[in-house]
Image (tube, rainbow, N blue to C red):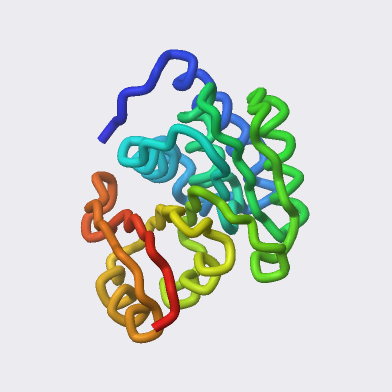
Amino acid sequence: MTIDVSRETEERLDDYAALIRKWNPRINLVAPATLPDLRQRHIDDCLQIAHHAKPVSGLWADLGSGGGLPGLVVAIAFQGRAIRFTLVESDQRKAAFLRTAIRQLDLADTTVLSSRIEALEPLKADHISARALAPLPRLMAYLDRHLAIDGRAWLMKGEQWRSEVAEARKHWNFTADVFPSATKSGAAIINISGVSHV
């Protein structure tokens, strides 16, 4: 599956992919075995968020950014909109990669917070994204802390997403809109809003 993007966005995504390939031998940003299929396995996978989300403005926080998936991909896709991006990554080496990528890709509205998610002051983010960070029951506490009251989260989940949603509902109230993944069978992107304790 390929999502149509502008030529400028395509060029930035190519430059981002080149940065991952350059840094990956020193810092494990993605599993080395997935590098030959970097575009579909990682970049196109994350572009699905940009396809479904229609943000106009506000703060977008990417939690546990790692190598920038999905945070940098979404920031590239939404470049030029009135959206500020904050990438949260506690690993100092990965944070250094993210800062280098932001500078080289000229993403002026994107910054990095090198901190643990639970140690941050509430971000009050209008939008939150996360990929391969934690099971949904644990993610809910992060969303409760960092989402604005009317904010929405875009969570990329694997094949166990149904059981994770069921487990999370034991302790949390939330609305979940599910979009089946177009790049990985059985996986899904879950759009969550209205988070509160049961």
